[in-house]
Image (cartoon, rainbow, N blue to C red):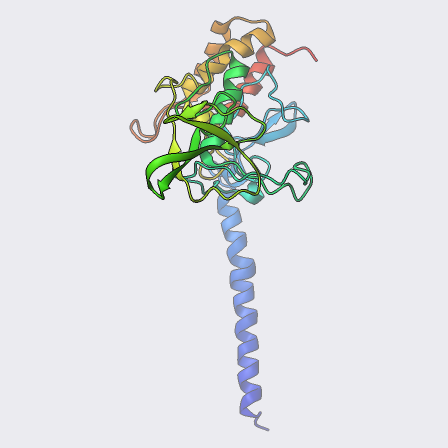
Length: 300
């Protein structure tokens, strides 16, 4: 007996689903997995896992933080660059901050809310303030001048909202340091003869002109750029040789060894440009810290 056409069509569709499930859902993944286990490909396909004392401690291609439970830098270790991926180097939240050079004004939080709660207080730092605060913190950690142009001494973006009598022009009538919440003392006392105010949550300052103030910080900061900016993925495992050099003194002092001994390990874990001309030399932080523990154990 001949089957109805709609039954034949459904059976054909079912056969196609089964065939493609076997081919693409089973056979193809097994072939790709098998190829990925070939010598030379195995480590990268498995995540380039790094082990110490027989236990996995991280990945050679994914960065990680070297901080204590409170987020403070462990002085015996080299520090990674900042990360915008989740709480830091979270592969499930890989991303950049998506903030650009025009991000210079912070969003003040509601003082009636707990900034440490899950919901937070609604505050957010501009890219400029993030860079300024990180540079200040790195400078304090490494014992160098962490000041940068367009940053306040308290580690925020040095930005004013300047109000004019005729909107965008005319006599200056009011000036607010928008990134410094009251009762903070503004980073400068006056601007064009008008006293500078601190910022208050809830006030609308959009009518003023945004004016970043360069300040007297040196053009070239002692803190390298990769120490204060996150990578596009938020997962980069490497830092620049300049940032590694900045940390040598602190690590050597913490481990009671000489800077020369630390420098040798830095050199051993520095890779050059790909093909001799692509990219920049870089230092793998995890491999460097493991080499430190292997050669100069830190007393627990």
